[in-house]
Length: 275
Image (tube, rainbow, N blue to C red; front, side, top):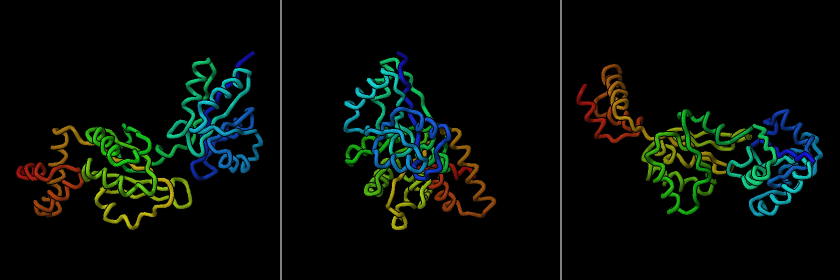
């Protein structure tokens, strides 16, 4: 008997229109949908008139369910795995079933679509060339500081998720470890109250009362600049422009460039002596 196919189907992260024709077709054609929360997924299925049977598949039952699903796949049933929102296995269950499917020579097919971390990243205004995604930051401050300390010298952009009730604490810890870097905070992406907060961490913290803390948050953190030669040339050029073209005093220019590039003011001051 030919084995079934395991489909990893990306679903909308807020706006029900953000789903592909292919994803809808697959959800209609498979024998079973394994959903993180059947109540949440039922809203999507009802919207698109999909009547495929569902069962729950979440972090509390994924090991047991994986065994059941593998048995069904071995019998030739096609199964779609969906998370509550976005792409399965990205800070959501499904890694176990994927690993088990691969071990059992079952075909795994990704059905791409919405992904909160990528949507936030491309809208952040921060470099998208290279990035590291760390999922949700740890709940405990000690663990959070340890993780951030291990990341602070990375040159690539850092992306993480955070819960609304921990957002301010997380930002304070990020500032403590990373310094006053440029960040972007994406709130409720694709939903009615979608919003972005962009700027230096300190500025966002100073205006934190304006941040609506309802919903889900993605934090994008600028990577560290580690190339002194390129950085010096770029910084010196920016200093000259402010002093010579905009008539800034050296002290004012040093302060602004220090904030812009997230570098120590003493270093910027030494470069300003070359002007």
